[in-house]
Length: 396
Image 1 (cartoon, rainbow, N blue to C red):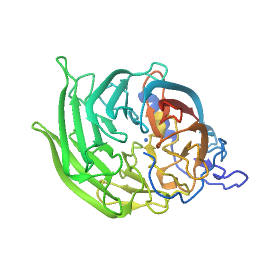
Image 2: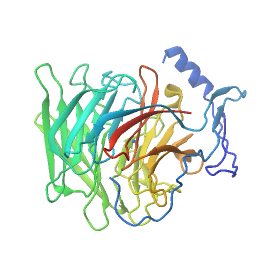
Image 3: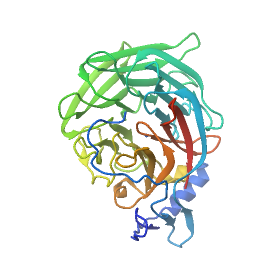
Image 4: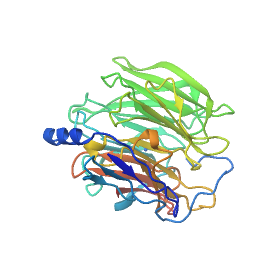
């Protein structure tokens, strides 16, 4: 297949091609049926205009039949939730097939009373969220959230992580399993680990959903990145091995995600904004332990990026996505998104757009693979006076 795209900047043209044999994979799948405004000086002015900065990436098969054609990301729907927050939200979505089948989406945020909240949804944004849970935990930034894999039957457990409001800002992890007679909640406080911003949470590929990976920027002078394992045991949550990456320094919350493209070898993505330059940095790893630094993005932000890897044949959307909030002369902090044909080309061959939306804190991206239709999602905290949470669908 061939890929063609114009460059990220208007009036510049760069052509790119990738060759591959995806027609057989598409045919087989048809037969089967089957992402805190950081402190510090701003190093670069992001664009303020809400205009598309590139043309389309087009995927074609060897016989030049379009498989699909991708254009500029654009909003196809939007809701403003009645919920308000002090930071951007956290969003977990069902981006690939796995059991159980609900909830499909989990939205978490820190309310204006500093308490942690989450809601779940089984449909698209038109059907909304339900089952709001307000916890007795507090934070000064957003939490991180992931959904579990099975203990709760049709309603799976939810795990949250956050930075506490205690004087040292210790990190915390909570695992909540729903049940017919009430929820069972287990909590772990990492008494030796602190952060100045919100953490990131993801599952390890242990095959049974029993190990969480917690990533954060420390309170050391360099705000070094850290990753620790948190194991779910019959006795509760247990602290596992920890690694500090002294060469990676972040000015905002990091992003740790599992690549859902089914690529080989398997990859994790780790994203952050450099403490000195505020440039968006990222690395990849097969085990979330040893990381390989990737070429940095030519974009700047005061908050961390949100990243997402998707299987193109299942979702019919581009495989790599990223969202971030503008900085510099973009005093309104517009929401920016980009996509690329693969993570390997993310910094060199992508489509980027600045949406006509503004955010406090970084936006997050997600993908709901199930009904009522597949939805590419972006969520953010608005710049309205009350700071409502916004959720939009994107088309290409």
